[in-house]
Image (cartoon, rainbow, N blue to C red):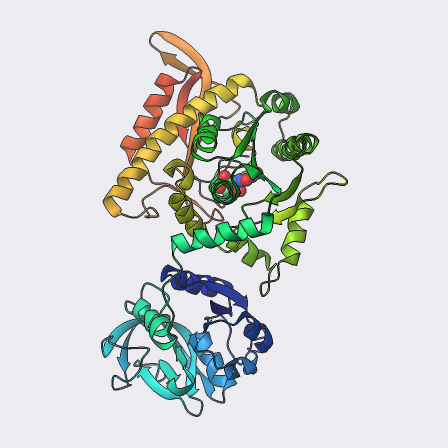
Length: 527
Ligand code: XMP
């Protein structure tokens, strides 16, 4: 285990990702962790992240000085270097201009630093700082500098304490990975043993140990997270897992069949397909207001779900555990877990789920240590098909919030067919971009795309006939986290194909519009 002490959220996550990419398991801990808590975790190495604060600012995060006495190798970046310096008796100064972006670094270690190893004497690094170390602590040597930063890195090799003012964790530092490797594998003597196979083996063993002979229930949505949890549990406990797939009739075309196919043919679990389409249709019959749609769909989900659990209990197969697809960023962002303790997370989740009186389950969250793309990699390694592993985000309330106004069977049919065309064409577009760039997250690829059915009709002409039909709105956005999004600058020929196909192939539609609004001010969904 390598722990990353986080002095400012996004910095820590990126470092943990880099370490994990090198096949060493890494976790993020908050900077108020104490030396005894660190000792209990017994990490093989500690990395101190960057952070936005100035070490001398009033509320600046500090670090328990006793952590430096544990004899564990440490590496600090940026704020991490400064905090190491001031904690151990050095000083930090405020520079006039700061240093932002690429900088030319010169090694001053005469080739002796194990951190720099075989890397060149002159190298480019990424800087982003205003403060810098002025005097290094006793016992430390300056190992590199730039034109504006005399202490670009420092070390006390004897105590295995290393630090850089620059950011080795970003791609703009070309030798950054090499420095990280030198630290992890050379200085700390770690092995690159955290591989997909070992991750799966460990997760399977942990699930078996936790569950024993009891029954686990899982709400399967067809999304990545719940599918990967299902696949992992299937490997661990097989038919002791009941996957509940609640079909509210608001999924995309062919989706229920695809999910059922995977979890009945490919994985050997107890699969329950709840056909709740009619019940949802009745509940939503006159509902227009988006938040009311969400509430109805959400609360009905749990009713259906608990009904299955009750049936299982009555049939002599009582459920002890609820498996959930909580992932690591959920845990970090909720601030729920400090150092390995999970109690508060469990509580918050339980608060969200409306358990009927007398019902409670223990939680199984096998993905709570993984980032989203690690979850996808796990899915692939477990044999889940690409359409699940790389599925784009799809809202829980499904197509109900993409049909403006009341949800009817006729509108659902139109939207499903139009949406299928949108997905087919934009899947193909994304595949072409992936082929050309080799990058699934290329700036040119589209992050989320779907059709929306507004509650208006307009006049058109097809053949010699006047038509009076619905428009379909194409929504396609680029984003990385859904918090902000930009409308996708799709090539005209792609737009033309989508439009041409929808009006030709979907009865009831005579017009296609493209939503060219970003978020903010719009949202990604229309409701
Ligand atoms: P908005 O529309 O708020 O959407 O820009 C941001 C992201 O969240 C998804 N979304 C939802 N997901 N239940 C969900 O599970 C919902 O009620 C919901 N509403 C929006 C949306 O698809 C987008 O990816």
